[in-house]
Length: 388
Image 1 (spheres, rainbow, N blue to C red):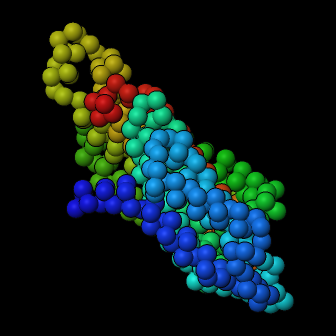
Image 2 (cartoon, rainbow, N blue to C red):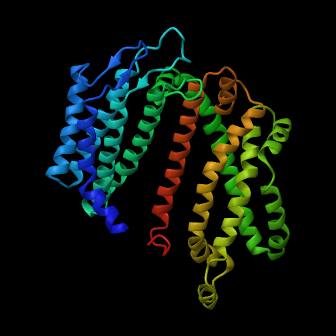
């Protein structure tokens, strides 16, 4: 099965893409919002980009060049050629307003999408091969997830545009991007309130206190028997029950959201740090004792370095928990700013595009935060056997 799948990907996907493109040329793309039929020959630019994509599939199918830059060319052809037919049928909305369908996809669009899917498949296979080579490993490793993410967004746009989904149910990525660009000041203020004030403060306090208490628990054994069961109990408390209480205790500003984040991040850090400290082998501890090392020397030079993978695992988990906790906590009371406030307010006004724009900001911020922690982990634990 594996050999068949590999052969299919390498040898036939580009040929299938070329055949689908040729078939798609004989059918209309669809209709715009005014009811006009759109075909591949409706505009010179549309026909030109269609020709470039078809040529890329033909060259790959019959000549089969390989390499990183060939994959980059295919990537560019896929992105340019895939988006243009959607722009052609996603014209100005009619008098029904933002709830009106943005267009109707024809058979030519769906056949083209199938062909583009095979071409994306071939491109991903080529870039994955290039990622295994040392000279292009980093660049190709970024292109593979980037292309796959762009392909998912494209399928989202195809579904919304081709089936005429009302924006009140699911707006298109293009419409979300327009609202995002028009609301940068509001989104920036929400990001500062939620992420900079609440998330970073609560994350630092929760993880820092969890780490210090873990070292104390390791030093005082009876705390481990008494504190860990209590920690499991508190970590199981629902955030929707804790958040209103924290708002009553600490007020409506960012302090109450930071308190919720502290509760959510404290015990994952505590449990993971204790597990990491206990991961040191008995032979290593005996060797340090034979050298006459104190508890602090053993902790700093042997046990904490061995516990770093566990500590970073807790940090990465808490990076997502902190953002979720801050946004949910803002549903229960906040000043007129913040990502959670924006989501709850705009969904009540049926402004779904703004809701998705806020979600996009939260997703990008959370991903970058997680990525920075992963880079820090790689820089500090490159010597650890788990990394090697």
